[in-house]
Amino acid sequence: MGLGKTLQVIALLQRLKEDGALDEARTLVVVPTSLLTNWQKEPHTR
Image 1 (cartoon, rainbow, N blue to C red):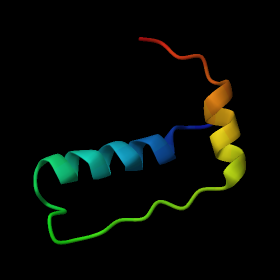
Image 2 (cartoon, rainbow, N blue to C red):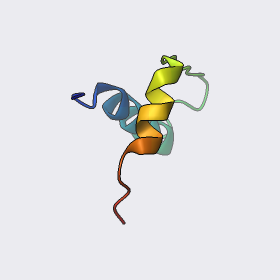
Image 3 (cartoon, helix red, strand yellow):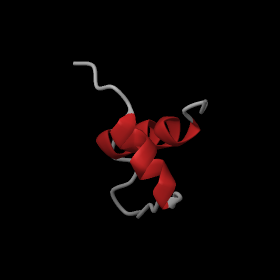
Image 4 (cartoon, one colour):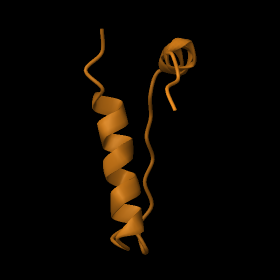
């Protein structure tokens, strides 16, 4: 079971973008392709 570290990083980057801290910067998140499959299998709650 994962600890959600990737999701935490993506959430942090989103917050920094919303706050304007990334106006002059770029970010790149590199993850194994298997992670994408795992995310698709996760139940979605809304």
